[in-house]
Length: 549
Image (cartoon, rainbow, N blue to C red; front, top):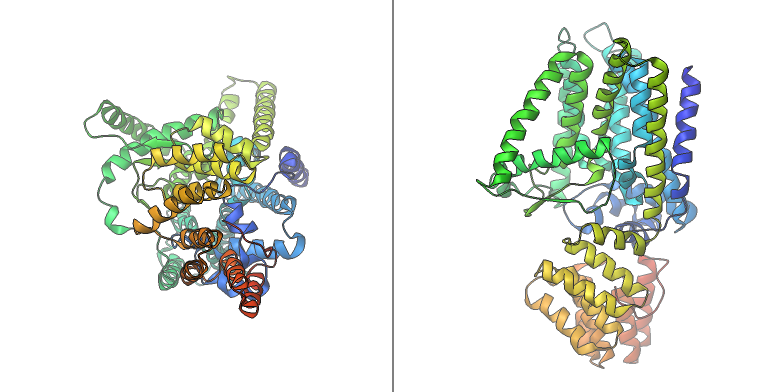
């Protein structure tokens, strides 16, 4: 098959498999990152995108992802179809880059074709592609792959110092790496991937040529630290490190199973951290030695296998949580953590299949039929999974059924019931979340909202007071408490609480709007107008009404 025909095939298959995702709604973090994000609704805030944390949590810094939403909003506003289409296009481009990269690295076109097709249609990818807020991972993957390709093209130079087009390739590699870091922190793995590539070419000594990449990482880390954004609580790294590492072995088994048989997919898969000297701990230790044995065997078997194994573990490391972002009693076994690592698995599958053909264990015709059947099977599963992402209510109901022990999912399902006016169902979900995590601030906040919408202001106030008295008060709790004060005629207290909310988060349009309403009720019409104007400046889509968030 000619290159251009295969490229056309990848594009056509990608569009076909994800066609039914275009009509999906905004879901999960899409609300905070897109629908209710004032930074993407006016180009005057573009600087704020590059000087603030991702979703305001001071843990992640992914400005390029948010900037892409700014561009999209200027084109199609809050039409979710446009955002979904962009995700699909980036995913297809990533499949094309994988096809090109594997040809450059492995020099085996058949392996590149098989792996890129599996990457394109495998249902494990839906969490990254069908979910709009998966954009950060899609962009990071795109720039990692592009940077890797440019680096390989640069490495073909014959002189010690790059000149001409080789210098351009090197600069493009560095630029793509920088864009990758601005898309998602996991792009840092590129340096390890370059070392892995060069490791297979021992005659080339390129230690100094990694230095600019390391300088970029250091500058990136310094800049985000200057913004007060830090991903790692270093004091939490050593405690429990061994247990997390052995728990990751169990996660690894789950991931391998999902790559081969991707059934019962859901977005809140958790793996409890093993306890010392338990049966699970002993089993994990045994599995660790078994996995190490197979890794060494694969590593020594061929250059292709060693690259595939190295790729899998290098790209999986950022999502391994061996170095934790926060201390939890479990590891997130997220499907999107496999977005790039799965390429290593697919290369191994491709090499194994081709070896069966070479050894005449399976005929070429039979192998083609089996591969096409697998592609169709995975494509149908992806098509079905896209439907599960269609609406928030359907999605959260399915996820809550699959992961009933997750407090976060109960809160999200409760929010959906809140929006649809099913307040009793919402209250039940929020209470279930609190039962699972006693100090869950968001659950208390949203429980208060549900009571307020039922006009049970006494119980609503109790929830917001619980948050504030515990020292976990945030802008939502103060803003919502202000709303309760307004409803109960305590306008001075309401104004006070709205101002506290605005002090914590000056980009909160609903606090300005409700503050304006309180001023209006006091007869201060000019003050009210200024607050409403400020709300509209922050978010042009914001309606001037009293609301709870």
